[in-house]
Image (cartoon, rainbow over all chains, first blue to last red; front, side, top):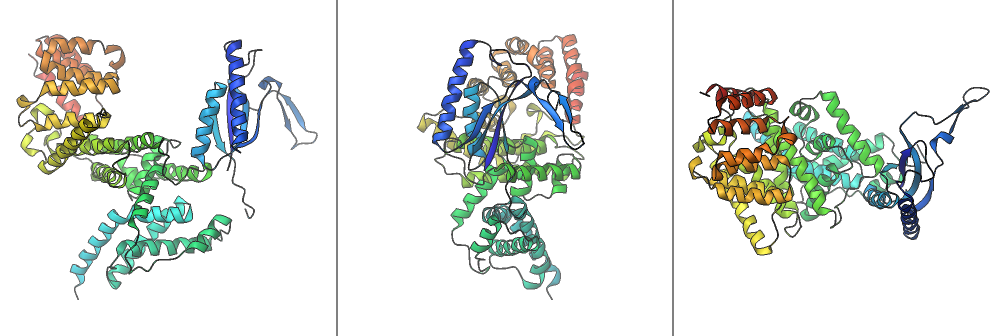
Length: 122
Length: 426
């Protein structure tokens, strides 16, 4: 099964991201890199990346003609999606164990959410 | 015609089969079809068919086998009806070998293991606590949704929704139907025990005149499920001792049920209970379990866990024929051990109550005073203070503490007891 593992953070990021100081940021990045390597080696890695700040987001509504373009993220919130992994895991227990590792590495809470099962007849 | 006699015998057989076989049928079907919903519906249909058929056809020689076979056939019918043809279901249909209902099931061991898996799936930490409770009572306990809703005083539709959502999450998020890893086992067993203790307490606290019998039955159900996990978990498992501790704690608490509320619906505290009204058989079993754990802990050198300590405290209380024979220093020593595992203010409050009996109310009052910030909104904190102040002859302060305790008490039996004690103050 594929799972989305999301990390949330503040809307506006400083040059330190959401970390308290430079040393913490560097250590978190190194730990996250090592975690990604482990995901790759064990065959869990599908994709991972960090996002630019939520204030750089643009919303497009193409249901109307011409499309309506709006500045800012889709939902107003205190915290926004800051980065994510897509992983392959056999079940939720395995995904939760990986999420715990990822959370420790990146210094943030991780939300684990399954992708919809692919049903060729559905 | 043996009509009514036969009917009673059949009704009894169906009730017994429901107690003994429900979880087994659901677990077996869950394993085969990989879907709790199909398993639950198949099991429910099988029992409904038994109600229809057994009075005419007779009780099958192996009711469990008959129910599993019938439930499996019903599940296959449903899958065909819904034309579910994705790989999982096709695979399930291919491996189906419906057992002969007249042959005893061969490997009971493997199926017992499935019931344990079912319990772990229903009590998975990714599910909310309320969902775990509802799902466990439905899937493992075999209670109906209306019964569970009544027991927890919620609308039937709300409970049905809660259980359906939990089943959906298990399917969509890939919560596995298998034994936890050895590393995870202690935490997962602890999670199951938390659910069972919640079920027990919901029933126990509901005790009293006018209580819905379904609510009172929750204690029996919690004990039954704890016995089930005790029977299924290998003795060598790290958390086995805590399962025994939980069972002992429930039995020793349940034994005092009848003596705990007076005929007028007032709470009767331990010191005023008629000890002759305690259930001797439950006490004997509880005491025996505590003894085996004390010996096991001594032999292994492993410190007993929280539930074993709570059971031991209850065993000391219930060993005394008269409140005056209570071995309070033993109780304080057990609380000292408990405080090391669980330094919460509620444990400290209960320890202080025992300290009052050993070192006097003044020492206890000083210990209780340190808990004010944490427990000011908790009725038992004020009730304990009120009692200690009363014993020290500080009536005015005691009265104020009783007032506050009564104000905060959520249970009518308890409020009635506290009011009487307050009104007895000089």
